[in-house]
Image (cartoon, rainbow, N blue to C red):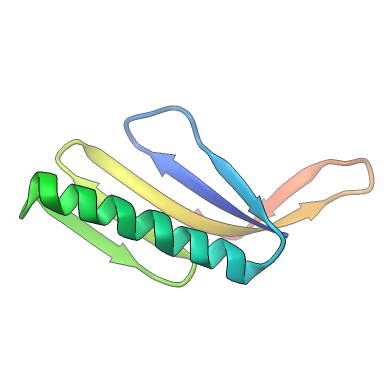
Length: 87
């Protein structure tokens, strides 16, 4: 299992979406990143920095930063959950 974690510098909430496959998590990262990038480019024009890799994406504007990262999800014997990688 894989988790897509979304971090906003301007918000204390950290949404986590869990997917069965790495491919599904990557597809969702790409979709969310491209949608947000389009919105921010229309709003902020030249006042934006952005980058995207396979497991990571980031958009920086004058209002804050949004990051997406993919982590492997491990579930322990007692049901505890750990995220490996990312951040």
